[in-house]
Length: 288
Image 1 (tube, rainbow, N blue to C red):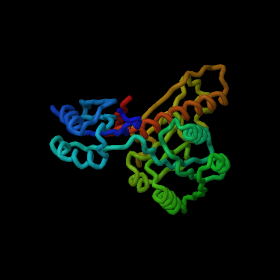
Image 2: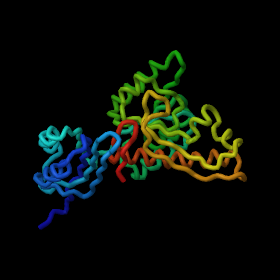
Image 3: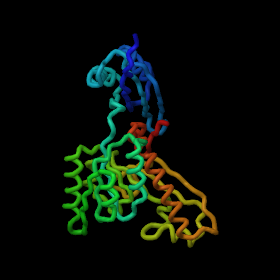
Image 4: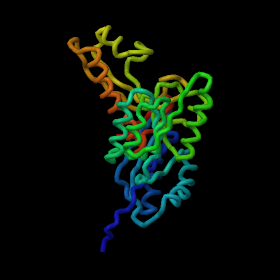
């Protein structure tokens, strides 16, 4: 009689020099361990000669993920593979940072509460108290860490301490209007996601939507990207646009822009948590 308990879903993501035999050897490895592939994506990057693969699969014989990791080392060595195995049931522990604009935070909390994002929000940190009630009403921890130029290093040290104490695996900047230091970013490579409007570099600084409106911009949008020590120039994960027209007010621009920002950020967080994103130099490979 077949068991009513479904086998767990594991995910394998890898990159390596593009060469003959990688797909065959990975497939043979999974077959050998009695694993059934249920989703597969692959990409050969002609610009750098790297190959990327993501397989979602179910082990049908009870093999655990630790055994798969250990047994895969010989395959990895053969092809110079950088590989990671994940259990899809393990929600990604996520720390959210926010300042005084709460639309992205509110959207993430809603999606988290309804289970539409495979993340576990382990806390919200802000340099202001504006969204303490919103955060706590959702049963989430809130920490206010004010910041001044002379306290930046100490404040970032506190963020790091909280992230480590709560086991955070991902940091999301939900309109956190502070520039993270290169030292902090270096501790979280490919693990900090930021969202910003699409007007960069044309309209840097304050009130970008109002200045775009004054210039008659016809498209507004948002960009989600990984954070590096190059401000707003990390690898892009997702972008979205929305057409606007002359009859709209500057306030309409702001409202539309916030909608796009929330949706684009949620997509980026979801894809990261589902292990669909791999880095290829300054770009990302995002498997649908």
